[in-house]
Length: 153
Image (cartoon, rainbow, N blue to C red; front, side, top):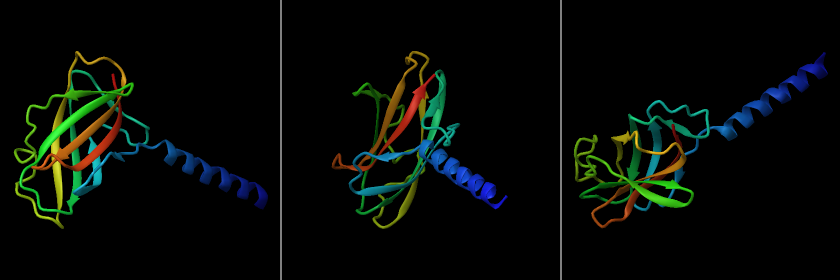
């Protein structure tokens, strides 16, 4: 009986470990003057290995980040990487200092929460895509760069 319990425990622990391997992971793609501490995407099941972006909808993204330097202005740049080719996602408001929860200038050593909306157009093809989300400072340096694995459906 003890041996069966031990084997069952090993399978449960192994199953939990494997589930975490398949969980969604946001990757830093070159942050320089900041560091993201949390990323969330609306209606994204983080137990899966990619976010499902439904065509003809709007997705919200929130990025919590800290700063190592003072920042005067921030621009948002978003690309979708499909089969190694980056294609721009056009945002209605690329100025991250307006209507995103940020009030520029921002001070180093502080933590901030940035929020934005991304329209997923009906015209987009149904493909796997790596979303590259960048917040760039007044010198065009990446404050934060995060890659989000996604699938457009």
